[in-house]
Length: 157
Image 1 (cartoon, rainbow, N blue to C red):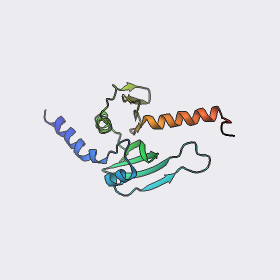
Image 2 (tube, rainbow, N blue to C red):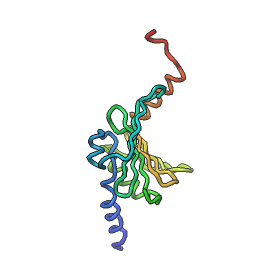
Image 3 (cartoon, helix red, strand yellow):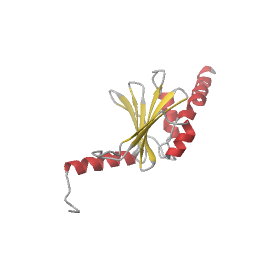
Image 4 (spheres, one colour):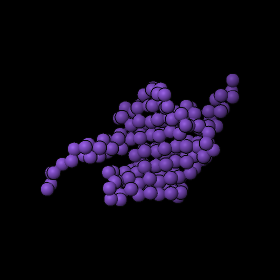
């Protein structure tokens, strides 16, 4: 009977230090993970949204972070050993990214489990074993960019 609780304690202690939090600054990300493995700046001509993507590795995980406006707006988690992230690990990720808000019960889709936070942030645990947590700010920026693309404006000419 003690095996399950001990397993959860082991999972929590070996992985919780590897999890970013939506809303962290690049300096906070580096303090949490160390120097990034890769950085890509998407502020080039033609980009609809000014984003930077940074990749870290820590605690057996690859963490791909999207930064907009100087803050983390999306984190994608994948185990380096290609094992899937479990539902229990997903719940720990959700807890680390709650920021005082509540996540909904998971909605099961054909290819993923989806959680929504009170402020419309979204988390997705895919069947491929990866997990993505997106802030409402990134979703809003993407909607605005798409709207501007579909309905160009002559305002300011």
